[in-house]
View (tube, one colour):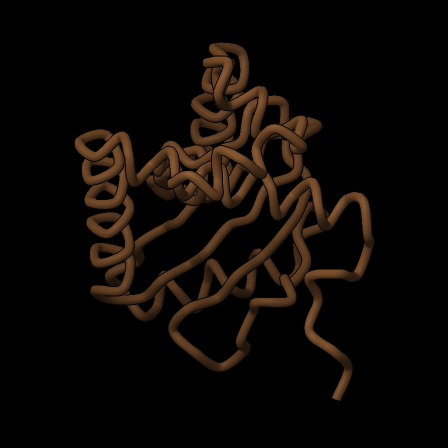
Length: 172
């Protein structure tokens, strides 16, 4: 991993990571738990935290990314939830949303925080939750791999911030 360590000297985010700064603060984790309860109560679901906060890949100092998944085992409930979220003033379809499928993604603001909410019908939710747990466990067991991935992510974030559009795919 010598290249990542060398480049990290020029990356403020990588320096923060290497200094041992917490990726997710206690306050952010508490907010994530609070948001899960709010979502659960409002929509009668059991959301699970996903994304970088759940896998341990959040960058220190970054704005928290509150991503939740919801597994729905009833087609009727899935359709009702989709309808409710489509009519909601709190959520809109995400750029990742695919209407007409069994995996819908919404983005919004709950409790003053940006939230992404994925609804998954059938086994997709179980598979995603297991994959998140597996990634978190693998990264916890392999610190060298986690360091390599985190440094690459930190460096890419800083490069993208210094040169907006640099990491975007060219328009077709």
